Amino acid sequence: MSGSEWTCRLSSMHEWESPYYEPSLPVSEKSNPLTRDIDRASSGCIVRMLQACDSQMFLEEAGATYQRLMSDGVVETLMEVAKKVELILKDPRDSLVVLSGCGTSGRLAFLVTSAFNRALKELNQSPVYSYIIAGGDKALFSSQEAPEDDPKLGMLSLKEACEGKKRVLFIGISCGLSAPFVAGQLDLCLQNPQVYTPVLVGFNPTHQARDEPIPGCSFTFRSVVQRMEGLAKSQKAFLINPAVGPEAISGSSRMKGGSATKILLEVVLSAAHAAAFTHTPITQQGILQHMRAYEKTLEIPCAHNEGMSALLEAAGKSLQRGRRVCYLGWGSLGVLGLVDASECVPTFGADYEDVRGFISGGYNELKNNEGPLGPDFRISHEDFLHLVLPSLDDHDMVLLIYTQTDDVSDVEKLARRVREKTSNLHAVYHRVDGDTAATDDINKLCLSSLRITWPSPASGLLQMQWELCTKLFLNALSTGAHVLKGKIYQNHMMDLQVTNSKLYCRATRLLQKLSGCPESKCEEALLKAVYKVDNLTVEITSSDISTHTHTARTRTKVVPLALVCLLTGCSLAEAELRLEQQPIVRDAVEACLS
Ligand code: S6P
Image (tube, rainbow, N blue to C red; front, side, top):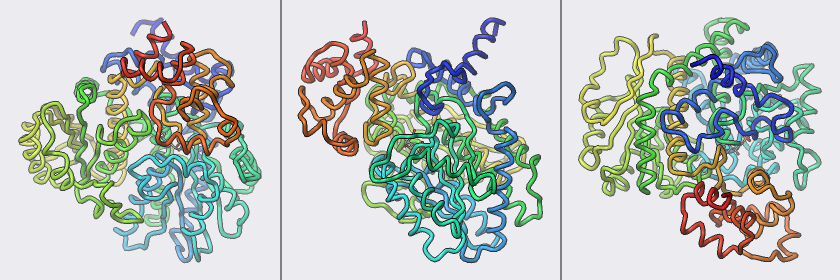
């Protein structure tokens, strides 16, 4: 890289921190200068852009506007929270640690509680962790955006989870410091300090917490955060909110937000477990060491750039042809596959069948609160064999996701079955140096294999690193494939579903940015597209946002339609026709803009 290229890259690495850069937006909603042209990039370039975005998670604090993952203040709070968890682990009677969030944040709450309850079981200890996801377990594998707006539901689900408990450490996760569901839970904690100690995890500075009124509530997310700030001084509430930079696709907090959530929670709980069960004191050094192991993990995908861009290309081709991408995973990596696949629906307006995940052992492996979720949520490899495999051919891509600790003979068996229908079979495989698992036959069955070799012996930490690496990898694969399919305009998801208030505001802002029209006009155009009318009635304009987002649940392409109307002044019917003729939203928008 030349000197000037480097300076340029460095400045866009930090550009988002300038007070003049998209000043009205919180960090989590800003657009990332690094990915401005991602929609026109080659697969190799997309991979590199996404990696550069991920590396912002570990930017140094020196001279920075916002605190970082490894800033002193953040590390101190992590230590304090770890000590609270340690106390509960040492005396778990009538106590609980609850992790809760909406969408991806709830999915990570599930993943992390599962891992640490499993660790407790291995030590013959009873579980102390519990998760809550807005919308219940079906939200683990499908988009349930509406409950995010419901603070009462949040409170009730927390009360229910903590029935009869005398001491609860509540960890609410909201990457954007924005979800009313979590605000409601934090408020409940603040009102009942004799039982609850609240912790908030998110990735905006506190002054950027969402301040919109929440219908039926006297508090906003920001006012709850301010109350917590007051209590933080006496360690009665904790705020963990480093900045990790804007997402590669604006607002897509499933990416860095999700990864940083996983890192922070695992660092805290690992430190607490080590303190409670191996007498390892909780120290700043220990926390930083664990963080650095994750920082190193980020280098792994970089070392496999070529393989990754080939996979991204293959997935992009399948999606462009209207065919499928299937992840077949084992253990917790299988859960990450399920999660990544299901997030494609709300993130890219994808069809449920476009990207699907399956896990070995299905619900038996998952051990979720509600058990099997019925015929709409089939997730086992058997389901894949019966429901999906028969219709596959070479245009459909299948990805095996496994590690040396999984049953490789089972992997091979499944690979053989897949090969009978499609040669478009690939694998991501984690192993440690010197691993002797017999995977050569599997590799021969695959068109490409990313074999990731790790230096240290398999351990709890290594499993977490495998998971993070797999998450980064799958997020890049599904994001990149949808970029190649033309779903992204610049670095914005155009065709977003407007199914909660956060998404409604994001859609209006996006229309403003791309059309240059005033906010009121953009909201009008959005509503016309939502209600499928050319003239808004008083009934529509006097309804609240929840009515709009409820109606929008069954609508498609509302933002592209509204934008075409705004840019051309045409009717909705004409806009629909235009989009039908040009189904690649990015191209349709560009045609209007030019
Ligand atoms: C984001 C994802 C969403 C968010 C959810 C919660 O990529 O599609 O489902 O996870 O909206 O956001 P937050 O900011 O409260 O964690």
